Length: 256
Image (cartoon, rainbow, N blue to C red; front, side, top):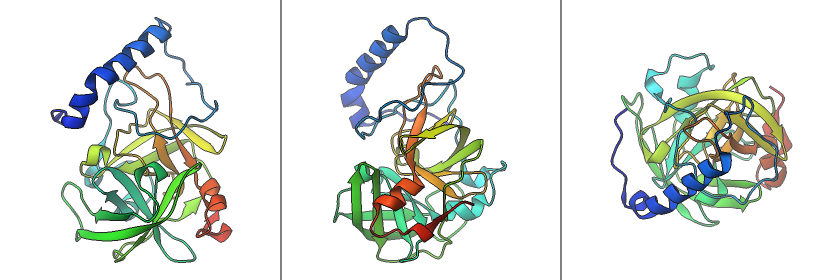
């Protein structure tokens, strides 16, 4: 995929990010990349970060070109939406009615957000642009729910508490057309799920973390790996969000 020139935001913050990267390199020294990135430390305050891919290559596949092994991806991807041009969300199934689940640091409570479905290369459906109201928002856990003015004619994604060895994220990195990335499940602890070799960028925040069966295990909120392969990405577990949410109920999630 051709690299686009940085926008004004990245240009402005370039020196800061470069300094941060340099400090990281100096701190790490010349040690080899660990086989298993450290996980399960004390969670940090939610923030939008993760300017680099996870490893030496950026392994995004345009969603309509995907031929991998995750179940029913072409059905699941219809529920993935671009939010305000800067974050990703997923229309999920809930007993009280379908809502879009995203990261809490993407929106504010009561916000009116613009949502675009089917923004992708070689679109395979009718694009829907609609608005929605943020009815729940939190940073701990880092999630938000958006009630849509108009529901798309797509099947909402079910929630799960069952992890699999491989995970996938369908996302809009940097607000670009929809892509998918796959990676390895590492661990789940402190209410978070950790994964490696699974590329995300700014704009991927709020995207659903899917298990092999195509159910939503959590939402991506933090990109902490870099081009050297160090670190791991993480997100909040779906069952934690259900427990915290007045809207979602225990019957909305199952061991499947």
